[in-house]
Length: 544
Image 1 (tube, rainbow, N blue to C red):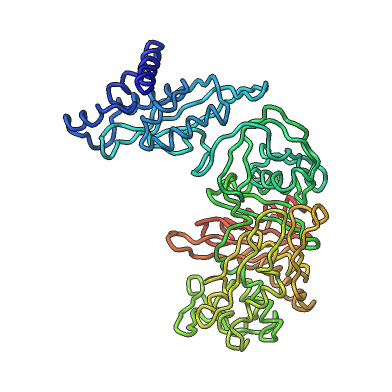
Image 2 (cartoon, one colour):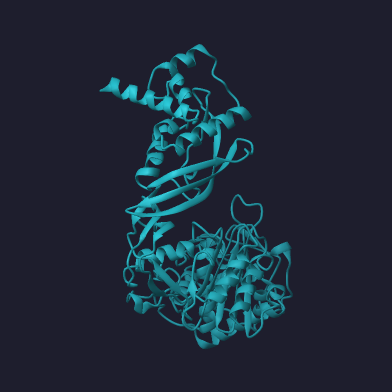
């Protein structure tokens, strides 16, 4: 049996050589099919070192791509630096993804990277459809053999494949959906790229409930049950179910455009009176939904909560003077204002809020007589940490109870506080409305899920003072330039937060216009009004 199998392999190799594939003889001579000549070769010749040459890159990539295109997974995998994983994935390309007639064409190499295009056919139970896409591979030198090899990773097969994922073709596990915005306009991932991961999740969760029937598809399947399948090709559509969302197509389009200005940015818009999410956008658009799952310090945008707590406790008032020195020490930690500015002692809390004075807020911490006051305000009034049920996975913010210098850092949105754009948009909506309305992406009556409710509302006088301070910030404070194009009754708060390892701080900005609140964060964007501000302004203008 073994002898017969070996003859068959050799015969197959020569057949492929005659057919012009051009890799079979290399495999046989190198012992890559399981013979012993690889060891003898490595002992009789010096092992090469250093980067592979241009000729080696071209030859190795061609042999690998030709073998893959011919469906010879075993031979192709031996041209990689991880033959076991590569053979499993390459075999699954035909047996699980049902890809046939692949024509793979390499492009000019850039250094050690070779781009290529794939044109193939996917066939399943009488259904067939052409499939084309582009990917790339990198050639490296084998650590022990010195041979040029393809650096194996799942993305070689398809650019969207990651570790633990594979390609499958068959009847979809759930029916597809036609997602609609709150006005009945169709939402697609092609038109609104940031909604791609969200629509996949909504399909996974609500596809059967929406009343559709499954079709035949090619998709990316993850070993993580919490990660929804991502459809790459539809061979037959089945019947999509209709799913209403709270999104607004006009606001979503503005959000998509706004975040594209930066390499890493996210924004969320929420309607204060209802909690309805009107837009969610990220750049990069695919992958991690940072707008709803991110966890980072929000900087001075957190002063909305801090100011609410201080006013509610009677420690401060919008029109009452507060001290704003250039720096202040609290329990061994020194805090300062941007560029060490200070304000006259006669200036009010409104001025310190609008100018984003850090020291004014920290100097009031002892007057609260409660280190946990900020955490309580965030939870009890603003709904932070109350297990939000938006309709998809989301992080609902975190303000841990803290003491000493850590508690002081929290007053200005630093330290252990973690937020994302969704959380800050909701905080602004609560300040504007006076009552926390848990953000939702799909109506509650779709599945009857319980929504989080805060234990109390902001007193009307506090809500009015905080909202007015935000108006002043947009009128003449740090948010003036960004909010200038926004009309209606408007207010805002800027923020920046330093993150370890980044040369520039993150830019945070949150604001409202009439019955729409929005918040954005731009990674390494600098001061709040510089980068995140225009993103929020664009979204608010679209919703007005």
